[in-house]
Image (cartoon, rainbow, N blue to C red):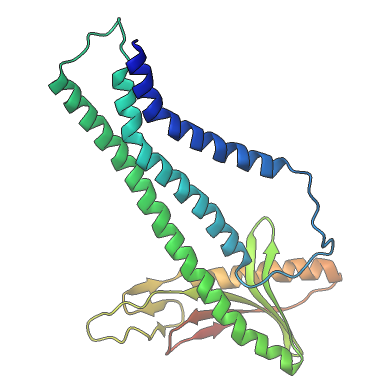
Length: 250
C-alpha cells in the first residue's frame, strides 16, 4: 500500500472514527462518573416524564444514525482504496458499480432506520404534548382539595399517566393523544363510544379502554397491599383534543 493510499484512506475514514470514538468515550465517561444528585429526596415526577426519557434516547439514536448515514459512503470508498493481493482488483467501471450498489444498500438500510426513529419520536412527542395538556387541566382539581400525581411508576408494568386522589375516591387516568385526520362525512374532532369500542373518524380502537382498566387494577392492587385493606380505584380515559366522547369512566 503506497503512502498515497494511506493518506487517502486516513482522510476518508479517520474523521468518522475520531468523531465516533470521542462521542462513545464521552458517553462512557459520563455514565461512569461518581456524581451524586444534590437533591436526595424522591421528587414527584412531572407530567410526561417517562415519555421525555424515551425522547432523549431516541434523539441519541437518531444522531448515531445520521452519523453513519453521512460517513458510510466514505468508508466504502476507503475500503476500495486498500489493495489486497489475494483479490484481483476490478476494473474502474466494475469498482464504480460495486461501490454504488454497496452504498445504495447501506444507505437504504440506514434511511429506513432513520425514518422509523423519526416517526417513533414524532409519536412520542405527540404523547408528551397530550400528557402535558391533560396535566394542566387536572392540576386545577387541587384547588378543590384533590391530590394529583403525574407519571406514577408501576414497575414492572410501566407507568400511570395521572393519579387523582379526591374525596370521592382514587382514579387512574390514562391519556391518549391522537392526530386528527379527516374522513368523508365525519368531523375530525369527534369520537364515538359504542360501549366497547372507540370509533374515530379514521378507524376504531379497542385497546385504550382495556389499558385504562388494567392500569386501574394495577393501582388498586398496589394501594390495597400498601394500606392492608381493599381499595376501589376508578379508571378514566382521556382523549386529548377530541369532542363527542372525551372520556369514559368505570
